[in-house]
Image: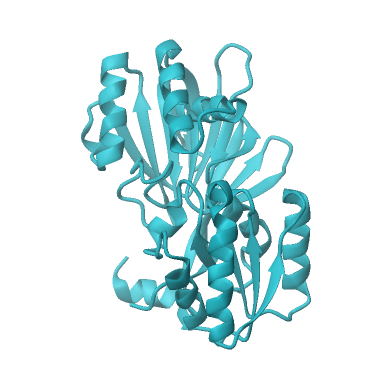
Length: 319
C-alpha cells in the first residue's frame, strides 16, 4: 500500500473544536491525571473551547457518560486524560462514530501516546494538539468472546506469559507503577513453562505449538514502550502477530530483552505473521487463560481478534 492509497482509504482532516468532552481517570498515574486535566482545561479555556468535564464513579458509569455526550451531538471532540486503560474505555463508545478522540497521556504505559507522537509528560502541549483539531483515521482491533461480547482496542492484544503476568499484577497491591509489573514478570518467570495454544489465521492457517506468548498488534508497543510488534502499521488493515515459541528460561529471557529494544523479530524462537483475523484458543489442562488488550482484561479464551479498517479517529500533531 503506497502513501497515495493510504490517503484515499484513511482520510485526514481538521475539526474546529468549540465544545469538548474531557473524561479524566482520577486514579491514573497515582493522581497525576487530575493535575494534568486541570492544566489542560486552562489551555482549552484560553483557546476559547467549552469543556464538558466527565468523571464517572466507576468504569460503567464513565462509559455511560461518554455514550450520552456523544449521542446528544453537542460535542465536536472527545478527549481522555489518563492511561491506555481509560483510552480503551473511551474507544468502546467512540469507535466508528466519526468523533475525533484526543489524548492527554497521564498513565503508566502511555502506549497510545507513544504510537501517535503525542506529548507525554506535558499536559499543556497535549492540550494544544487537541485544540488544533487535526485528526487521522486509523484501524482498531476488536475482540469477540466465546459468548459473543465485543471489545475494541487500540494497541495490542496479548495471550500467554504476558497475560499471566497481567493476572498477577492485578492481584498485587505493591509496589506501584512499572515496578509492580517488573516484579510480576520475575515471579511468573521463575515458574513459567510454555503453553499449548491453537491460533487460526484468517480461517485457514493453523498454528498449533506450545508458545511463550502471542501478541496481536494494531500498533507497535505495549507495557510502556515494549516493541513486541515493531513493524505494525495502524493504518494498513492488518494486524501484526508476534509469537514467541517454546523456549527455555535463558532463551525466553533473551527474547524479552529484545522486546525492549525492538529487535524481537530477529530472535530464532520468534515467528511473525500478518492477518485480518485470528481465532485464539488455549488447549492445555483446564484453567482460565485471559486475553488482555490496552493493558486491561478483556475476555477469557477462546477469543476472535480482528482488525477493523478505518474504525479509529485520533487527534494527532499536525505533520
